[in-house]
Image 1: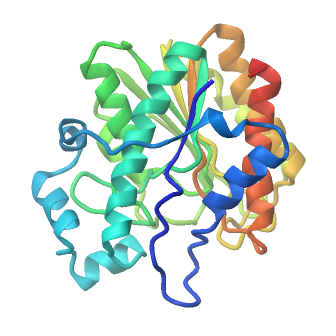
Image 2 (image 1 turned 135 degrees about the vertical axis):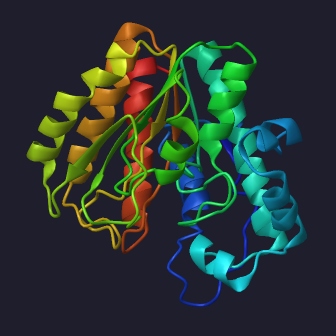
Image 3 (image 1 turned 90 degrees about the horizontal axis):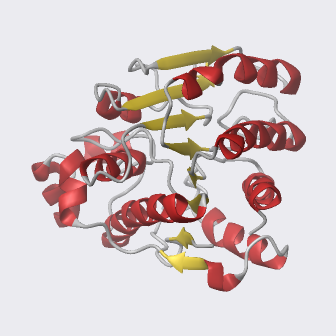
Length: 299
């Protein structure tokens, strides 16, 4: 089994910045320490091919990202200060998403210990997302004829507006996003199926809501599912505004993964958001997603 990581790139952040960049290394270390993955199963995410990047993103935007020409307003919208390492890491994360998709088609499941950059649009970044990994991987797979139909299951607490803007117009992609009502982004872009969740929602109601809407994904008859398994619905998350427990998140993951597994649908995961205080709570939730996957797929 192959999984991917871009955590060799550690981009600089100002003191007190609210993006928890160290969570990526912590997750890899925890997965290995807890015996969920072996070190040799986690491969470095390679740089994305230009053709795949430019299939999704505006060439001028890509050139300005690479050159460090994003102005102050663009960096504020992104939520991260530009640096050469940030740009390099973003391209590796995009390449890792493609490789994880390929591995999922081969082995039934894969994922990247990063990604879920669902706020990135064609010509601008936002919400800590410079480029859009699921859009790049999905449109590559469709263009190459690897699959005919792809579904996005986005359970990050924030709506995947970039996914919706880029992928919803494609008839061969179905975008399902279940997000906290009133949370970021303030301007929604309609998905194929959006479900808004009341602030403070707990496990029972959340899982019932997911069970009611998830069948629409399989009615689309996808050949592949891309799962944005953000753990920011966790009660202790600083940005989430929902009240799920670690057990509730594991039950969420088990529902999505088992429904795909029972149908023989390959699934590739991206970890999405997680901003708990302390961040180790988010890392534990990320690791639990991989533990659920291991239980089903016996890797």
